[in-house]
Image 1 (cartoon, rainbow, N blue to C red):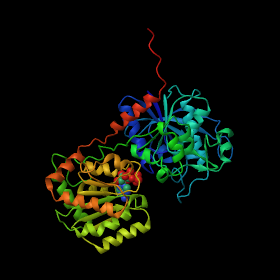
Image 2 (cartoon, rainbow, N blue to C red):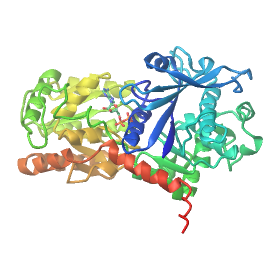
Image 3 (tube, rainbow, N blue to C red):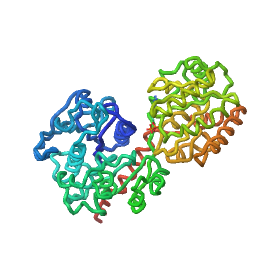
Image 4 (cartoon, rainbow, N blue to C red):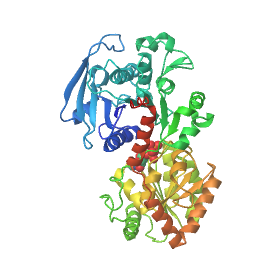
Length: 483
Ligand code: ADP
């Protein structure tokens, strides 16, 4: 089976968020189970710079830029550094050779021609998946991701192709909305600009186009697939998503089990595993030392690593922090984000030096040491499409306390691998904290939970098998063998 995986970012080439991690890992995992998955990505400078061998496999001269002028574009074949996944790079300098990030300039302002840039990516994805492809290699499935490739299923279907298209929603908050006059500039037929098509409250939405025209929609956890059909988390798309519920499912993201492996993690002062846990005590002691926390071996140490945004439930944590400290606990924060949240966390540290520590900033290495050195991990997100930290924490024997939402609900088993609370309120979080503290005092029971979490399988292989099953369902049924 051949799959074209169209994406606007992929680690380690270019990353702004979780989409890049998935685009780096999933195609490689699919290839390991025998699927010929290839990635299509724009040739941003960061991408072009990191590629080794490239070979031109196609030239396009019929695409137009935002001024309606033909633009120079070609397709290069290369491979992903590290995994070696075959990579089609859309080299169109007027669209992608820019100094800032993939979507915005160095001031953080969206590029004014984003609609044209990602319509170009989408048109090329559709072209490669359809009958007019200039390549010998033909995908059986086109797999698109988020709004940037959301128009591809529309172009594909409107061109008359029947190649099945899948779209994965990594973040429903970004919908690629542009004014209605863009429709004709993007080589889309006027009749598609309707509620049964690409129109969204009077505008054009790339994401809506994908959700409408794709044969199947996935999200990154089964619970989130249900939640986005409701007004609270549907971000205006709930009606369409609910109408497509039979073609909507959730497949959990995996984690990089080599990068996040406590028995071989170079960021840790001491390695450990479910069978040999003593190294975790050293990690805790060293973490307390590194962060200026009192070196108390028995003080339950709570870790939290998150973008400091409202989504991550920091208000809830701040509301229960005094209670944690009163019961002899310690808290280690790592994160950066909204200034008001950063200052509230810093103020808490000033009130309780020795009990609370915070590093404001992004620090990959410290994030490994916090996962390893904590006893309990706090992740009370108000919503969470999948979430990675709760999986890292289970793997590192740090029991997560999570709000029952999205991927948190789907990965943490209450009383077995962590603690789940059901209402996003300080009271509900506090009751979960108390349950965790009570169990922490019972060492054998605590160890059993740690070991249960550490032995869970969060590998990409499991996710890849689920995508494979979905792709198979979407393929046209093979003709019966003749008698
Ligand atoms: P989201 O994608 O919403 O930020 P996830 O839990 O899915 O949340 O993934 C966040 C990733 O970013 C995790 O790998 C987490 O450890 C990492 N991370 C977030 N903030 C920091 C930080 N300040 N320093 C290091 N890593 C961080």
